Length: 268
Ligand SMILES: [Zn+2]
Image (cartoon, rainbow, N blue to C red):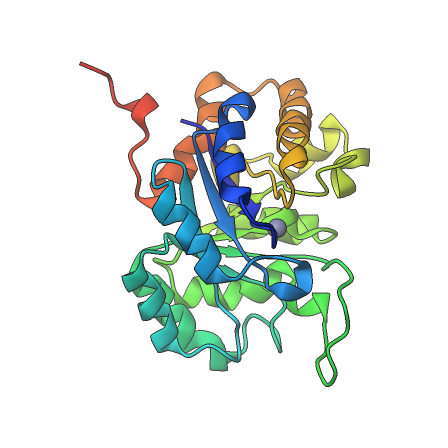
């Protein structure tokens, strides 16, 4: 089973329907959709959840938690409503602000995974009185978090660009920290100048690739095939064993999401 762990829902009517039609062409079985908020042009949580209710076989809805705004009880509410994971980005202070810990505590209790934006954030419209600071989303800002909540699985997006060493070291040191290699769908973004050596250098330890998840980070339908192809062409030269590739492309995600990986279950 191929699981896209990181994708977005734009403010666009009929997106879910057209996405589900396109998934087979991209070879994707399940897709996790989340919102980063209206500032990014994303649909709100409710729209994402509605899509998951309409297409439960294909779409998993992740709820955006606004750190510093949303209460811990909001997490429980999202779980009860059927969200399958959580997303955080653009906090009001560093990810490891202890004020946020009651929220993380509820996420840990839910057993659902947390997708965290890590690294530099795209430029967004300024909101009066609000500071945007990528330094608050460095991978190491999740160090105290994953230590304090050892049963909460965190996936740090974009391999923490440009703090790749931090991201890889976090994945090496913490059993509950993972990364994805998402970047700009067109042209590859930060990945465009990365060679085979880059990946060998960062993922050098035994079973390192068990900590990497596939994602497309799409915000538009025409990005799906492009993004899938870029990811494939990036990983193929590394020559990873087939079972490792299966984990990257869905096995690990299925485990974190608590869903059945049909490919791993022999059919009778
Ligand atoms: Zn994203």
